[in-house]
Amino acid sequence: MSEPTSAPNARPDAGDAGDVEDGEAGGIAAGDATTRERSVAGVRRKPEQDPLFEYLLRLGDDRLVLGHRLSEWCGHGPILEEDIATANVALDLVGQAAQLLKLAGVVEGKDRDEDALAYFREGVEYRNCLMVEQPNGDFGYTMLRQFLFDAHSLLLWEVLATGQHPALAAIAAKAIKETRYHVRHSSEWVIRLGDGTGESHARVARSLLELWRFTDELFERDAVDDAVAKLGVVVDTAGLRSRWDTMVEDVLTRATLAVPTGIAMQSGGRRGRHTEHLGHLLATMQIVARSHPGARW
Amino acid sequence: MATPAKTPPPAPPADDPALVAAFEARIAAGESIEPKDWMPARYRKQLTRMMAQHAHSEIVGMLPEGNWITRAPTLRRKMSLIAKVQDEAGHGLYIYCGTETLGVERDELVEQLHDGRAKYSSIFNYPTLSWADMGVIGWFVDGAAIVNQTVLAKASYGPYARAMVRICKEENFHKRQGYEICATLAKGTPAQRAMLQDAIDRFWWPSLMMFGPSDKDSPNSAELLRWRVKRKTNDELRQRFVNLTVPQAQAIGVTLPDPDLRFNEETKNWEFGEIDWAEFREVISGNGPCNRERLAARNAAHAEGAWVREAALAHAAKRHRTTEAA
Picture 1 (cartoon, rainbow over the protein chains, first blue to last red):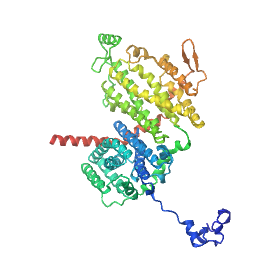
Picture 2 (picture 1 turned 90 degrees about the vertical axis):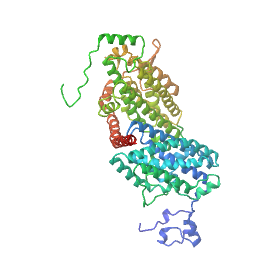
Picture 3 (picture 1 turned 90 degrees about the horizontal axis):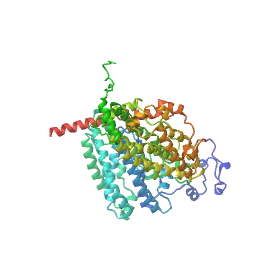
Picture 4 (picture 1 turned 120 degrees about the vertical axis):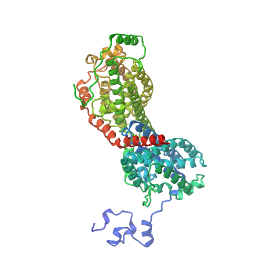
């Protein structure tokens, strides 16, 4: 890389870059100040430009990615009854995701259905939170993640069911019933494993420390939330957080686990800044659909 | 035989001929045998073996299909596949409960599966290599299972017969779903059609093997038929499956990999070529393409779940003590 890229690779229409001195700015076009800025200064992405679409993607992607993760347990659970239960929850989550993404496609108005959104978006276009894309770990990690998510989900659905967006409220009303069962299932496992044997306690306590850094992201509020509030989808994030804290603390206490403190938080999923795990998950999920563009299944 | 460390295998009690005669008379009269009824030791043993094999097949059968859940090409297909695998777990559980009515615990049967003593359907020792396999398994494998189970629903042992009625309903749904996947691929792109034909070519012969050895090599059949543990011979069931499936293949414009396939106007049967029994024997004796992987996956799940099961028991015991103290 001693020589800057020059003529052979230069774009033929970069006429105003003719007076670039060798070496300056690594060969980047640099005419007068205005041109230089125009060529490099990008736009700040404003997700709130289509806030409802963004909001629905967040809801849908959370459930699609978590449902996908849960479905990886199918046939590999610790006991047959759990193969049935986890498959059941996975099924509900993918079902919710399909409805949410379908609605997102309608809101967007670009003729993308739920499958186009699920199978033909890149990782950076996914809007799920980081927690749900983490690899499954052991059964305790999976159940604890599930509980932290389910608790949030139930409280959120309860709010959205009363919202002013009829289609979303309808999805929420149905999802509440499913999610009640999910919370019961996952919270019972957290309690069993936390207050089970020495080994199970140690494992689930470790998972709690691992997972806690992803919890704040569930309650992050940005311009999208404010913008959808103007459309009647009003979520009191602080109130949600406080109800979630109570619920989680109650279950963790019964599981003889302590709410972690002093953990540095991670986030970024809502803006497409994911962990490296999502890309692999999507590579698997999308491989068949993308290998046969335009095919019907 | 006196190895003190192990429980000796239960010596088959010499069945009282009068009781056997009464039992056979009940069967002949079409009565259903219930758990508390007297039954010959061999009847109990045969049923336990059949039901256990069936349950194991449901459990192992989750693996080849589970293999494609994460890659299903649409959300709708993903959901149907999860639901199907979930149904299979449910069937397994249901049939294990059935074996408990014969006095055999699920743990014991699971152990036999895991250490390789128990058999399960040989078809699940073949790999699933493309999405089309999800269609073809539903169409052939569930189709074959239905042919088997429809007659088992009239078997003499009440709990098993009733389980078959219920399970058959779901299998019918799975079969329709599988056939619909195949029909969709058959109407699809050239790549999809090739994928489908390849899956059919791989699964056709193993599906015919699902009905077990030919009647001439199946010495137990006579007694099992008399006792209505079985209702039809392996070859009869296999022929029925072929007769049902060939027109379905014609309807979606695919071929079956058998140059000897031809319709016999007199018998109205679709005659088919010789099954590769050497392959069948290899697969059932543990040398099929995926035998090791299937058992390894089951064993790994069981071993990795041990701490979870222990914790659940420990927690339940704590709960129990708390409730008693209160």
